[in-house]
Image (cartoon, rainbow, N blue to C red; front, side, top):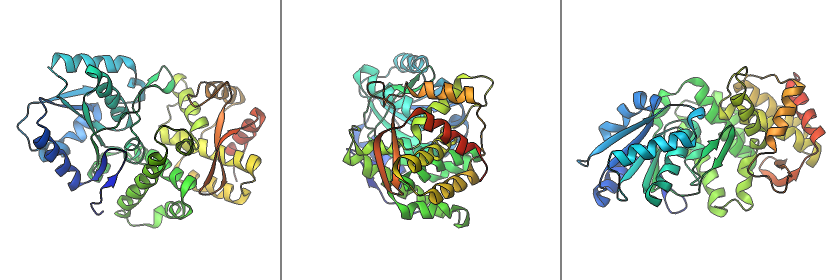
Length: 359
């Protein structure tokens, strides 16, 4: 993949060797008082050995490790990191580098934005999901119980470094999870990109780097036009209204297997596409095709009627709701989303029925 930097809102997204150069140049120029690397138990083991040899600096360095996984994306973990920073002598001139998936970059960004009212941070996303999603847009934050990303601020890093070497450290299901957001970027903004994603299995492995960059470009373009989510940025929530509720439901029910973010969003996209057929006249044949493509990557989950009711209840807590209404992003056509759609609840049950049937 070529080294082609993408300009985002007040910062840049760097790829591979350019990213290494950016970090080393920035540290040499700014001379932070201390460097802090935030990792989780996985990235400490698998990603630090890739990252550290490229870091060229004599500035004192501390590593702070948190437990891996979405259940740890909460204020308690933030408190632990704030204490660690404080005890290890962080000050306003310190630099925090977040090395990990979306949990580390979301939580680390929030910790940096609030510690001493804000210290500088850089994100180094190591999962495919974080590269194509969390890397762009300056959203930071943590979950409140099972309610996703309810506490947070929008605050940009100094830069984001996407290094595709980290993809080799990922389990297959984590790769799939990230692909869900890439499929989404095609559905909401580019029929051509959607077509390329549909042929993913036939493309050479190195082409994934090209698709990752293109996915970042798509998201970045949306965020640049609407940084505070007044209108266009809402389209990035395609599949997320129900997807987040499904993810939260599985997270807080011990008898359910936990779903990764992308796995839940993939279900949410099938449901939202069915609702698009019913509400906006999206072509049924295209809806069936989308369902079939996603089924190749994401094994079907089963939901009872009681569970669907509970999921619909959780959806009412979505932070994007206004005045008690649940708003959906739906599609008029591939690449033509419509925001703020209110959907009758009985249609949601039919959408689950459609998802659960084999066709």
